Amino acid sequence: MTAFTHAAFLRAAARVGDLPPPGPPEIAFAGRSNVGKSSAINALAGRRALARTSKTPGRTQTINFYALGEAARLVDLPGYGYARVPQSMRAQWRELVGGYLRSASTLVGVVLVMDARHPLTPLDLQLIEWLGERPLLALLTKADKLSRSAQAALLSDVRRQLGRNNATLFSSVTRQGVEECRDLLEQWLGAGRENKKPPVKGI
Ligand SMILES: Nc1nc2c(ncn2[C@@H]2O[C@H](COP(=O)(O)OP(=O)(O)O)[C@@H](O)[C@H]2O)c(=O)[nH]1
Ligand SMILES: [Mg+2]
Picture 1 (cartoon, rainbow, N blue to C red):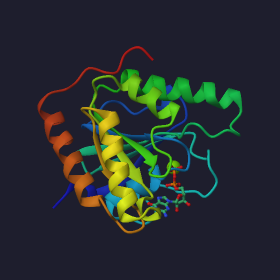
Picture 2 (cartoon, rainbow, N blue to C red; picture 1 turned 90 degrees about the vertical axis):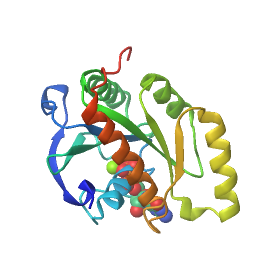
Picture 3 (cartoon, helix red, strand yellow; picture 1 turned 30 degrees about the vertical axis):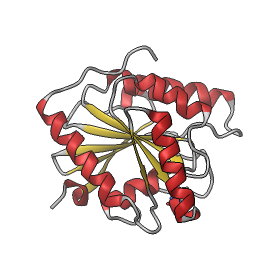
Picture 4 (cartoon, rainbow, N blue to C red; picture 1 turned 180 degrees about the vertical axis):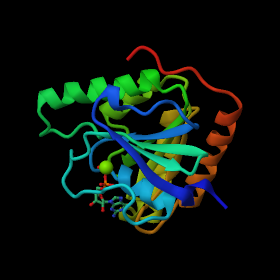
């Protein structure tokens, strides 16, 4: 029995003022546009269309909150790094996501979703720097696009570059890595109920 199967849409926040008041421990999903963040949330929740997915990059410009019953929240952050997004939208992204990360007193960890074929881009590295000491899981999604041997090589390379942070291969299509990811996130949530961590600073 897992809280992930009790997911429901809670709120979409387009501005910092729309963020919900602090509740149970939460886990945020960050990453470039179109890498598969919303699909990963759906796969973890065992649902087809809880989080809206899109073939067109740069669509989600709100922070979408999902409640896992009363126990936890999953947070779908707007994607970054889509070249055709205008400068004004980038400033808006920074204000919204920066504002969220600074005030998120119940955030227990961040899942950094990356396309397994293009991991650790400069913007991903910048986000890792922003997150500092906060627990991070690198989710190497669309792993179904790589051969088994390419997957293994990628995983060890990313793990080496990430140091203390975790990485796992993932596919929303084949469900590879879903259980492993859920197990780790359950651990974060369990630890988060015991001790609250301070919000991210310096963004
Ligand atoms: N092959 C494959 N396609 C995926 C996977 N995850 C997402 N996609 C596709 O990638 C596109 C973007 O997915 P979405 O979840 O909306 O990305 P987001 O912008 O990061 O939320 C959609 O067309 C998805 O169907 C995956 O694990 N494997
Ligand atoms: Mg999305």
